[in-house]
Amino acid sequence: MKPDFFCIGMQKAGTTWLHENLKTHPQMAAPLLKEPHYFDNLHLWPGVFKHLCHEYYAESSIAEIRRAILDNLRWDIDTLLQTLGRDPAVDLKRALWMQSLAGLGEGILSDDWYQRVFSMATADLLVGDFTADTYLLDSAAIERLRLGWPQARFIMLLRDPVERDWSQLRMMLGSSTLAEVQEALSSPQMHGRERYAEIIDRWLLGVGADAIHFEFYDDIRQDPRGLLDRVALFLGLEPPADGWRSAQVVEFAGPRAALTAEIQEVLVERNREALEFLSDRFGGVCLHWRRRHLETGATAGPAS
Image (cartoon, rainbow, N blue to C red; front, side):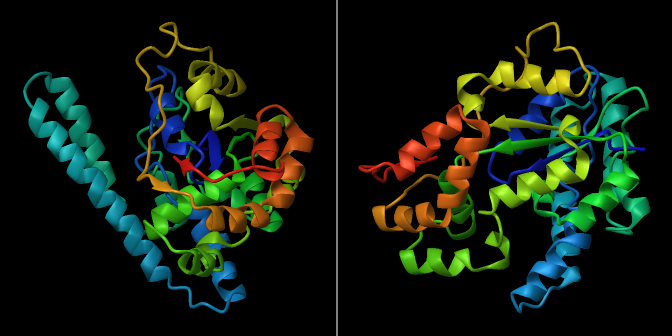
């Protein structure tokens, strides 16, 4: 049963970059929606909103999914109009894709709907769910996921926790004051994301160390093809013969804004335990993250 693997996050850690590159592999198919938000809408957000005394509206989540479907359809229509007539076989394939994508507007978040997200992937091709909030699921939800997809593999991309938080805050707020950041950090959207030890240990216990693979955002810049090779091998695929030359080798960059010293101080304190845990667990680049933020003399600067 599809999908074959889950890229479970983290949000703002390169999941879109990984999706765009992996789908160029000849043994990989793309889902109709990169992020169907199936498990998080069923098993995560209702509990988070209730815990923080916020109202959770399932209709809002469904509306967001419909907007994503429409955005993808607009892109597909524009592409089809630009290339129409060059290759009838390609035109037909794109038309069938658009028909399947449009069909996702009905029955959203049902079990049947979730399977239809991967309906364009044939049995001989791998396809993944790239919902970047899946990593926040609790143990019970992970168990349900594992029971439904016992053979699935899981990929988690990790990023400097301070930079990850700041990137998400910029996405949520744009240019922000300290007061706005402090308010946003208490919102459902930011809840629990700093608990790296709990999150990672929960997934290791829930799916087993052999079924989950960790990579680091820094390698998107420093070793993109090496990162893609490691992920492909983890999924049981040989790296492509062209060495990912047709793939993108830079991350998607959001709007830039200076991380001020006062905001950085708040984010460092929020992520202090995470920085220490990651450096102890993984070493390598995580040691650099820890030194950057926790050693005396760390200063604020632009974050991308």
